[in-house]
Length: 145
Image (cartoon, rainbow, N blue to C red; front, side, top):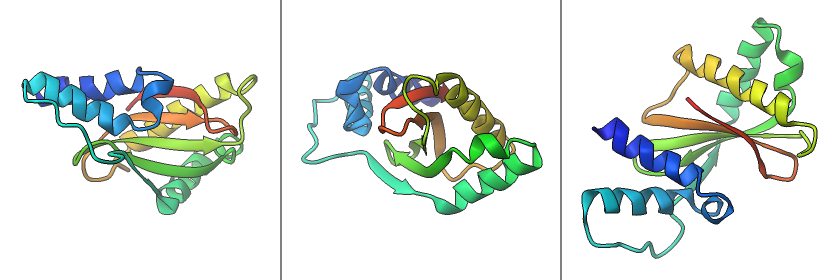
């Protein structure tokens, strides 16, 4: 049940478009409140927390080099853990891909990250999605982990 409800709320926030991008954690919290049938509890400030993880990015790069994918992963210049709730988060990879031509490469990068993650490189909690952001900070790809 937890996987269905919480994962569904995280997915709904991800699909919320530009309105949800500012604070996906608020969308997740609102969805969880709605599912639990509790009174609406509006946040007093931003809910989503972003923390860069240089160590995980370096681990991903090292893993990719052993798989012969170094050229692809070198486009990622930052990895952020985006905490949506106490236990659920997304992973964002910021790249130098352009919005017009970077879509196939960003989808391939997301898939590579999922393979890396499935090799037990995860952290405490539950990562729901990996998002690949272009040079302008906009989402180019999003895939479930």
